[in-house]
Image (cartoon, rainbow, N blue to C red):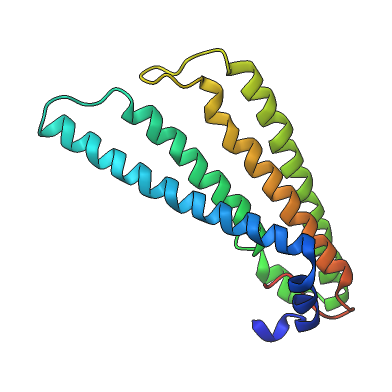
Length: 179
């Protein structure tokens, strides 16, 4: 698939300051996602050990694990948008003429960007509406569950916008959808 990628667009992307910032954001999001997955795995392991061996399950482990799962899933999904590793219908794109494919990909990227805005806005509403309620078993506000939703919305919006810019900069017949 690498032959389908416009190398000039990719080199230009590497030299742009804004795109370097987006790369740093993406790398950070991937590391946050990995770290949260690791922490959740350790906490669940401790919970199982404490419940079945020590007969004393920690009260905080379940709510903490659920919060960490939200972080690794949603922030990881945000990072996946940058590399187009999210769900897609590539068979349909391959069957389209190149001239049509470009515009379908651009429209798809714009729709994903709008979806990211929606995640951010409605995530903020959920945070505001539940911030004053404490989660059972922990001392965190219930709204903390929804912070990764808004963070992911921002990432999805920014990375989709980057994909739109790459698509507009590509010459006719060249693809950027198969990074």
